[in-house]
Image (tube, rainbow over all chains, first blue to last red; front, side):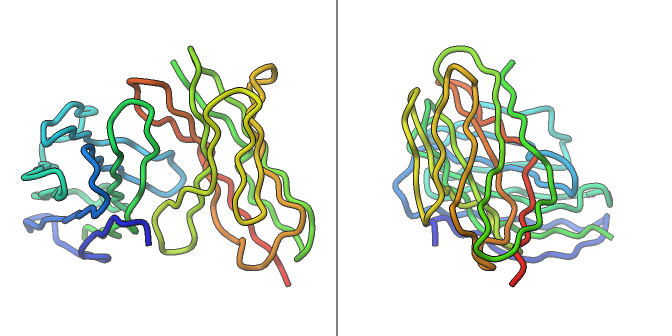
Length: 113
Length: 111
């Protein structure tokens, strides 16, 4: 248990669906992250939030829309996804965005049909 | 830019064998170095870290020493167990930059 929880753990959706992934951290951290982990590819950083403001967006398609309402919660809203978006989506948090250790949640395994 | 190279495996060992997973890096400045482990069906867990040259990180019998002269951070364990079967990621973090992860090394330990 790392103090970072993610729901749901598994999600199957069609290409026309809209769904949201949720991440919550109980560590008092100020920075939160979304990563995508696909088979046979390195971890890809998608979004970085620091103090609830987005500080980085690594050329992620607009069908992924993040939301950070407060420093403990992070969402990833999904709409009109493609089958190649199927992956494990990992949330992480850290105390700051300097040189801080990141703590990861268990991930949401997403399958897009 | 910063990068991490590690042996991709898979690595298959018998229980109680000695483990080494090599990791080398390229970075400007003085990065912190990490090993994360991912057990089947789970997210990444911090295994150990080192923040400056010659530091040794250790946890659960695993060790890695930050070698600036060889830009390496090899992971070692003297006697692996079946429960150590997982994917191991080497990573580095420079101040003000994002984490850079290696591709991961899958370890399978057979009874």
